[in-house]
Amino acid sequence: MSFSSLGLSEQLVRATSDQGYDTPSPIQAQAIPAVLSGRDVMAAAQTGTGKTAGFTLPLLQRIGENPRTGKGPRALILTPTRELAAQVHDSVNLYSKYVPTKAAVVFGGVKINPQMMKLRKGLDVLVATPGRLMDLYQQNAVRFNEVEILVLDEADRMLDMGFIRDIRKILALLPAKRQNLLFSATFSNEIRTLAKGLLDNPVQVEVAARNTAAESIKQSVYPVDQSQKTALLSKLVRDNAWEQVLVFTRTKHGANRLTQKLERDGITAAAIHGNKSQGARTRALADFKQGEVRVLVATDIAARGLDIKQLPQVVNFELPNVPEDYVHRIGRTGRAGESGHALSLVSADEGKMLAGIERLIKMQLPRTSVEGFEPTNNLPLKPKAKADPSRARNRNGNGGKPRSFGAKPAGRSGGRSQNGGGGQGRRSPARQSA
Ligand code: AMP
Image (tube, rainbow, N blue to C red):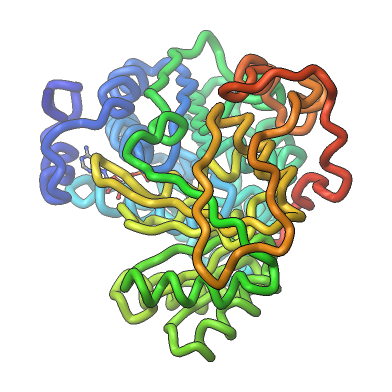
């Protein structure tokens, strides 16, 4: 199959060849014709599936069919984070190389005035984070009366980050007649409710989640005391001569602290999280990609949408509070047929989180111990009894797929509801980081 057989114009096909793509990815093969037909689309797709080109290419073709009459925007792409917004904007620029479409990106955390100027000049495609877009609207810097196509990218993450009110406000301002595309990695009740109100008889697109099966990803757990984690990580980086490793921490402070300690140990490291300026984040990512920094330490929200391909190593320095984040994290390794290794340093106090993850992925992760780093308190070896499914659904918002939560982990039975999660509340809304 080729991009031209999907109905894309010669200019757009040429832009994909310039990128070195010869075959459409599964999500592209399904989404491109659907978007070109003018229908609404609801797509289950994660980062790494080629989803961005899946909506950008047909969107460019559709708005290219007629010239712009006003200042635009005619296509509006909403994303949860500034990193993702910047990446989507880069993709739009790449794919629109041979067409006259103009695009811009706006996000929070940087000055608003230059963004106002850009909008005033007129544009076809606007990529935006919801909070900043509303600010711009309130300051009369943007109008929505010409919007023909709306894309919600990583809709699940936008809801997680507390953007639902901004999204609803924006939706209410858009022309009623428009095409809507919703991309989301997971489909919780909340997303389904949003989709129901937004999409008109959508084409549903789904590709096998490569993360959950994750056969190409070797996963392991290293039980270790909290106080020994940094030393163990340094040792692993050194002993295994890892040159590029993405490390996840739960908090921004944790990311900073770990980065400093690694640097003190002589391992080049940089942190990327919501408190860093856009410039600092871009620099850290560039240094990491170029191999000048061996360890990139990130929080979940900052890492989401980072365009880093096929990392051999992902380390969970701390387990995430939300089990789905584990799946997102390990999805950063083992992409596109490459094998990868995701390892988690787990201290005794994280036993419940580990159990939650093992329930979600329906497998027990192998434990590996390192001499000299044996934990003083053992981790529970097996996931504990099933969680109360209604509770799990509430916490994880996965009402649409109760089986993946209610299911028993391999080799376990047990009916008692786990009394876990006391200190593991949801991630706090993180609007400030977008
Ligand atoms: P995305 O899921 O949109 O973040 O895309 C993941 C990566 O795959 C990006 O770096 C794209 O440049 C790349 N990509 C997208 N489509 C294709 C394709 N058809 N063939 C090869 N690589 C692609």
